[in-house]
Image (tube, rainbow, N blue to C red; front, side, top):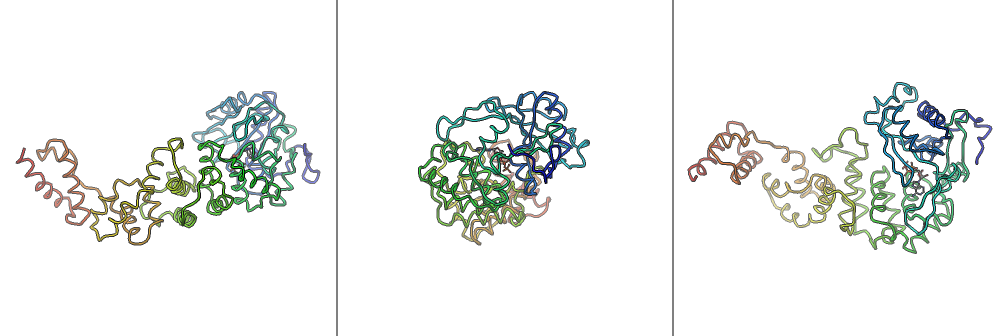
Length: 450
Ligand code: ATP
């Protein structure tokens, strides 16, 4: 166990400048009352040392993670979800402002805290390569020993009386200083090949090198095609994380350079893939360059749109199977991108707005937002016009108006509403009065027929 460096302060004084100090002290007190030591672990420790903002609060307790999580949820006004197989859980705050954290912790500013991840310190045994491990309780040092990289294997105790004690059994702090990502042991990528993707993500995100021996181990795991043992779910989880990163493009490049998905799925990128990923990332960054494209919902992280566009584009060129655990909207958007070459020739002609509308209305919006970045000007201009304006055009006429005009509900309803919309789109009618007049004309022959 790494002692607290004297220069950095003795127990009770953190060598780290941790955000959310008051919250951490409170969590430490709750754990102490339950008779267990508690720690801030992993990412937030790494990020505090680097002076980077960390979105997470990862807490480990040596005993009773379930009781601890329940007590935290009770005292801070959250909801606790527990996964007994891994002895992990999350306290979720639906309304962080009202979670009970804000008033007491206002000085350390955790106002955006939406959840706290809780684990019980545990060791893991990998019985087969790439298969999820068996877990058993262990001390904090044992727990750090199951982690992926030295820079993620540090902890800071938050137990009252020992608050701030720094635990760094694998010299993660030295690797942070040397700016390198290093595995804890030689079997690391064999036990869990998702670490190959994690290694690339952390190295690129932090601008670190992959330590020489670690790089050798990574390449040997790829040569042995160990990623092929992973379930699609686990690989896709990592790809989603990469898609959400600000430096997604260099991560994708490194993933391709290291042939990770070739090893997993025999997948090599189609020509132009990296350029397309870069185009999409740029587009997502300047939301609004696709006028009218849906903005992220409030409350979602800023990378939301990029994550979505990159992921569906990636899916559109991957050998997606039924075993891919993806949402049906994602599958539909990816299929629309992949099948767009069929619509494209039609869009290259000179078209009225209503004709563009008819071609594009069945294409899911995220696919259009992606295609607007990927397609060249003639087609792209029409996609942008559709997103920005045609898809927003509404008519005043309702079903009730049609019934009022003597029509029976049925397919004719849709046809007439469409006719009105197309006339609006093409500027043949501009006012509600003109729309009413056209409706009367359109309704007349049908009511006579009836
Ligand atoms: P981020 O900043 O991306 O959230 P993080 O370090 O918090 O990074 P998580 O994926 O949230 O990463 O995982 C939390 C911690 O759990 C990591 O810091 C690491 O110690 C450990 N961990 C996560 N995944 C693995 C893995 N596949 N193998 C070993 N340890 C892991």
